Structure formats: C-alpha cells, structure tokens
Length: 151
Image 1 (cartoon, rainbow, N blue to C red):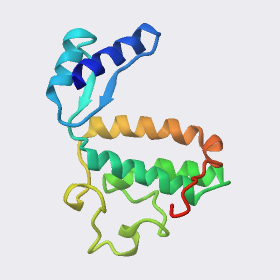
Image 2: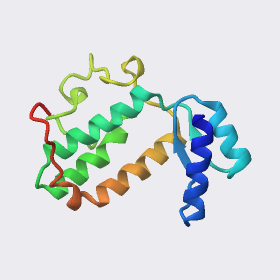
Image 3: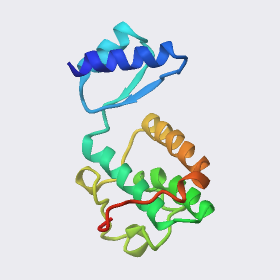
C-alpha cells in the first residue's frame, strides 16, 4: 500500500512539472524499487534515514527556529550548521546549543543511532541542499511560532 501511494504521489508531482530526484524514507526497498520501475530509475532513496534520524533533523530545525525568533541571519547560520554538526563538523556550531563544544571528550549526539556522527557523502550533500533551501528563506521563518505552551 505504501509503495503504491509513493508511486502515485511522485508520478503526480512529475506530471505537474516538479522534478523529483530523491526521496526520504525508511528502509522500505519495495517503495524505491517500484519508483525505479514505474516512475524514474534515477530517483535516489536514502535508506540510511531511519524515523529517529529524520526526527533528529526535525527537532534540530525546530530548535533553531524557536531560538532565533526575529533574527534572520542567526537563523540562517543555525540552519546551515545542523548538517555539518550531525556529521561531526562543529566549526559552525555555537556553544549555546552544541554539546560537543562544551565537552568534546564525552559528547554523543542525542537522537542519532548510537549517538555517533552520521556518515555518507551523498546523503550529506542532499541534506545540505535541503537545509540550504530553508536557510535561504530564514527571513520568512523567523516569525513561525507554536501554539503549544510547553514547546
């Protein structure tokens, strides 16, 4: 069922003129196989992305947005630092949110499998491209809030 929905969704997007070159999914080989067969053999799937890893990036982006309300340039920098941070590159991190900068000897990623840095250059490049799109729109994201008092 999931793979049929994915094929329909991607097919419809492509018919509307959108270019789909990768999808983010769990380890579902049936879906990527059906997409390759029915839609486009060049679509990439990143099987390295588990639900917890996707949630990690969502949480990091949410923190960046909430911590930089009203500050477009700071939000831009924070969003661009998320992917390198996940891959162990802390040059763009800020000590206010990066545990590695505060204690590099014992730091582990909270939310990544085993607490380890991510790996895989193609996935890194695709994630950087995705986060750059958000960072380029940081002036539109600085006023996003939440209606949840506990967030």
